[in-house]
Length: 91
Length: 226
Image 1 (tube, chains in turn green, brown):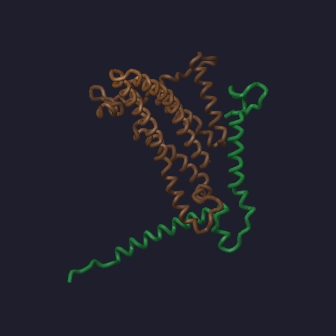
Image 2: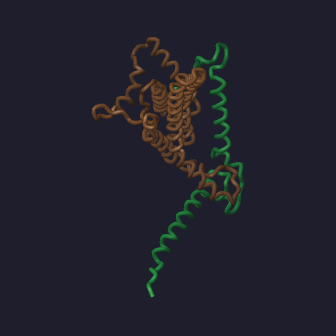
Image 3: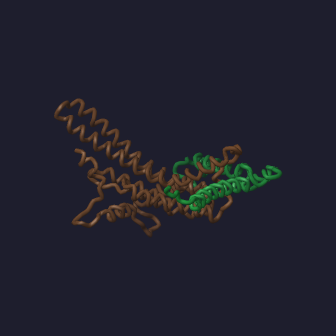
């Protein structure tokens, strides 16, 4: 899609992109630089922090998966525990 | 009075047949297609407007995201034209129905999220944890981000429904108040009428803004996932 020709809102003599369009592009480019995989190289973690941290992409993904796994284990534990508990007998 | 207040939101029927399909399809008649290079004024104006909106909205997307351009432009045209047509007296507005808006919001949101999980699984999962979160807050924030993800389509639909419904209801109430006040106090009725005019102008703006907001949010969800 060609989005580079002049918009009707831009006057003659201005650049082809409107100010608003350029601001959008720059804002999202900045977000991509901050959160992209190439940004992971600037962090040097050791030990368990190498795999579980809130800075690198891999670290964040592993933290999220660990959280979901923990919730699943807790739910499983309570489900199995309720099946094992015998019914109360009348005395 | 109470029954009349919500009568405009009941889906219209004629001889037992639902008219909703015809009403939903009607806005497409207002956007004719043409195979000519130089079109008439209406089509030229519509094409210029569409080009303006698509340039502003699709410029942030990469190649993959821009494949959704047709979908997003159809969405904004449909919601905008439906909302504006609903401002005609005694007309039915499909976007006041939560079922309709959920039917638009859920598939579009799910499409964007599934696209993200298929093409960028790592980044999509990492999205659930904001960068730089302190370690003790990680589990709580993951849960909060998951909830906020699943709330998105509901919020999209409810936002549109509530805005359009509330506006129509308010117009109905103030119009009724103006009529009732005419026989009691003409000056107060005139003031209420002026308020009604201003509210109608506001509703025109809300109709177009809500269409833009709905489409922009879908576009942003897509951008996060492509």
